[in-house]
Length: 349
Image (cartoon, rainbow, N blue to C red; front, side, top):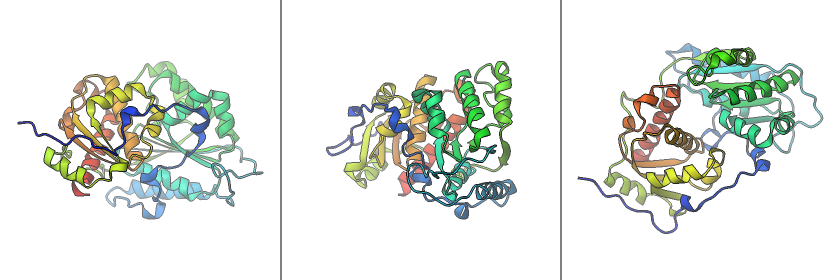
């Protein structure tokens, strides 16, 4: 027997009616940690005592950003007017599995400095370079003393070349970079494209970073199994607790249509004002293109600090095994971990 779930009501946000346009000029606005990470600091990072590498990475990173300190200045992305960048920027690379606190530490680094700084995901950096062009992107980021890049990964030759060029131009001029990734720097791109043909560029990127390994289990998985989508009754109870003006609800099939029509760089605009998302009727995703688009959407919902409730297929069956355990396995594992946390919050919130 299939349980019925309530349909969307009046006063809600309708994502299917939104058609955000990419304005390259707006890409440089709000390059800060998202709502979910706006309150994190080194002081409230709780390392797992069973894995000393977590505390070690925190201490090394805190020392790193302390060395960058300078008096604060007002305006823009915390620009420090009149100060020339220190030659020879350094790089730190936080390498570890999902759910070990890498993004917490990365956002803490951003919050700890008073020098000009920017925070973005690697995909957002690639979108910025693609939209502005390399020369304009370099000029826009030239005043920065610290760039925090979350989820650094090389998916194809194009972003390998762009990343190598971008870092190669700005780091010698004084840009310091802290990056997080689920992949060791020397193994970037492995299994995703013929990385051997780009080994020189990959090693050039890796050579700019000191690698800090964070070991440990995913803190989001408090049990051995994933949280499961809500039943119809649970969803109705969750829905009744939400504020209509900040709630967006739709069927999964309609969401896929929306995601096909909106560039991933505009997912943030698509979700503007959405504090809670109700997604009904999740089904397995036989297309990897659809699955990766959905993964990026979930990442954006999570990073923006939104809440979400889902009904439909069990999480472990969403992504086909042929690609769930393939080149993008870590992306899918992170997505399932985040969905599980969002569902746990929906049940207990």
